[in-house]
Amino acid sequence: MGALFNAMPGAVAQGIIWGIMAIGVYITFKILDMADLTVDGSFGTGGVVLVVCMTSGMNAFLALLLAFLAGCAAGLVTGILHTRFGIPAILAGILTQLALYSINLRILGGSANMPLSVKKFSLLLNLRNIPLAILVAGLFALFVIAALYWFFGTELGHALRATGANQAMARANGINTSTTKIIALILSNGIVALSGGLLAQYQGFADVNMGRGAIVIGLAAVIIGEVIFGKIFRNFALRLLAAVFGGIIYYLVLQIVLWAGLNANDLKLFSAIVVALFLGIPYWKGQIFARRIGRNAAADVKGGDGNA
Amino acid sequence: MLEIRNVYKTFSPGTINEKKALNGINLTLNDGDFVTVIGGNGAGKSTILNMICGVYPVDRGTILIDGVDVTKLPEYKRAKYLGRVFQDPMMGTAADMWIEENLALASRRGLRRGLGWAIKKSERKRYRELLAELDLGLEDRLSTKVGLLSGGQRQAITLLMATIRQPKLLMLDEHTAALDPKTAKKVLEITDKIVKEHGLTTLMVTHNMRDAIEYGNRLIMMHEGRIIVDVSGDDKKKLTVEDLLGMFERASGTEFASDRALLG
Image (cartoon, rainbow over all chains, first blue to last red; front, side, top):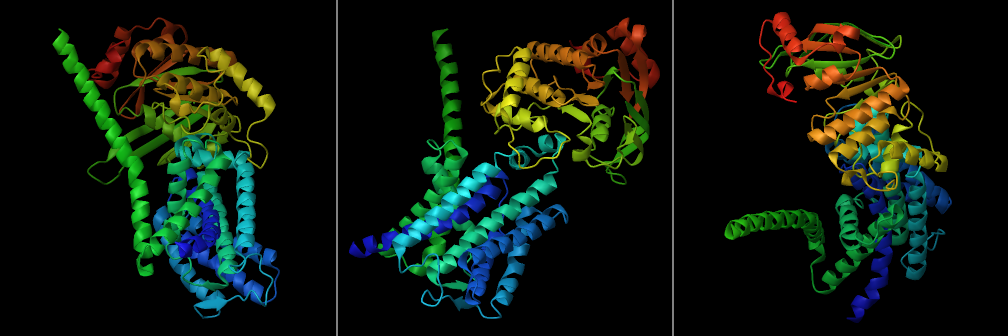
């Protein structure tokens, strides 16, 4: 039990960092209604760009900015593949993700991973000081939420929301839906890469594979946040916050199952099952609801006959 | 205001499903014309509207709006000139967005969308006034999701959206067909009021011959991708459903076979 409690703060820190990543996923998955698999690559891109920049002496903030921009570029590529090449969104994301694996290797100069020692560089956060890491990651999360809250209240932000809500209506009102989709993908992957840059600092290294399965973790965070907080969090900013909370809950649950004896190799299987279940719950709920209405209606008809 | 010159459109050419939807359409709308369009299923009524809006490209021909050749412009660029209401009440609004958000989106049709606030305070006041004019009790529900409204309310909102920035051309594609008769009448009354108030050049496709006669100053009938009847002015005022059926039979050589058009 003690080991579990000792692991909890670290899980919270990791949860917040992945929660920022989940905010990026929220933009494509919830607002644009599109599953963007680019993130599995762009998360790692953010990590490797940050490590390469910082090991060559760059300031951490500047390095994070570059990581963000690298993610934006990845999103731009997916956006162009989707809108200008006519490739379905999921496949466009997979293509970019695949290409990014090679690009991430290139950025690291051919090696699969690279350390970023907290002793040599002034990192914003690292796992030796978990309270500080929670604070810094939390501040970044709040900053991203505030920025998006502002952006989605602007004319352009509304155009993005309209594109996700009803494309025919968006076009009839003069919105270039190709452009809005590209902007959403740029923004989303920029945030995902920023989160990758934060994780690289936290864990003290970047690995070309660090983003593998990121989409599943991001979806898990978004969906867990929505299922648990959806009823009470109505405001847009709070909905984004719910995704961060979803990330934290996801990592806490992960710690618990590891402590309970789950083999660490089975983690990805566990993640996939969690996401499948949480995606299934709202669907099943809807079906049970529909069946109940059907049954009640049938009962009403019978009751009516009885009275007649 | 609108000039359609020799427009042709064939869907799925060279396949078993080949369908000649438009067969050399020529049509000129004058400023302030309110034209009703009737015709059987597959006559090309909706297709001609979709061609004007740029939903798909034409095979041949030219479309000019207020003297501007829009034939090759993408749909979102033509939107600058056009206000549209669709047959499906779900199609004209974003269900997940509030009433005021939908109106704000429409009030920037044809304008550059930047990083200014999507809705300004002064706009909210105007939206409330416009909604009050609809007389549907929507003026106090600015922050209600449009998805929670009835089909008739949604069509009324879509009408408002289509006309909130004066369009060169208002396009109504059987916009009351999915509504119950009472609601349909109300939406048509609102339509007529808005069209008259702003003197809008309007193209209204309908299945209902009575509506086609009652509203507008000009009526065209389509058959197999052609315009077969074009009446306006006093001639149109005197029309009856029987006249229209007779005209259809003479012009097409077949009987009018749409039950829906006869009803109502």
